[in-house]
Length: 203
Image 1 (spheres, rainbow, N blue to C red):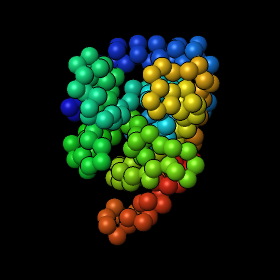
Image 2: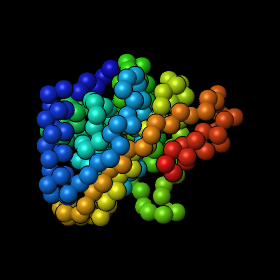
Image 3: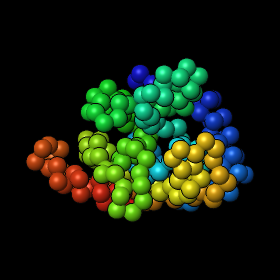
Image 4: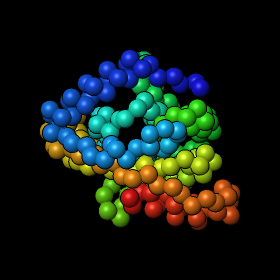
């Protein structure tokens, strides 16, 4: 795997971010017991703000990998930290085969993968971006569960354009694992895959 997280940096980062969220944002997390105890699985999160990354520290149960937009990896110190805690670059708006290959490697090695199916920071209500089906393709290929994780309050804490987060209450809720109905992943099943990813995002 091209990206290898550094366990010590990962654990220290989670500890610091979790402490920050609890003190500054009065953050809370529920449902951590819903995570599968063994084997690969995918975490599906809603993406509302850049504060989603710190908030997800509350929900960490074991080391995990996730994607981040490739422009962030052009900043030397930030790039080192992102790779050290399990992030790998993705070109948004394109079919990034390398990023998808890395995601497959994570699951093939029994790891945990966190993805935001909407791909970009969403709006609220009916204006949310259309969810992409990549998460369904991966779950179908590896026959692994998808765990829905709802992050709330991050957009109020750090809305687009804001330079400093507000002390707004954050909450992270971990749902029960979803086992998708098996289907053949091809162009004929696109509608079914879209229905499955929409169902994941509703949960």
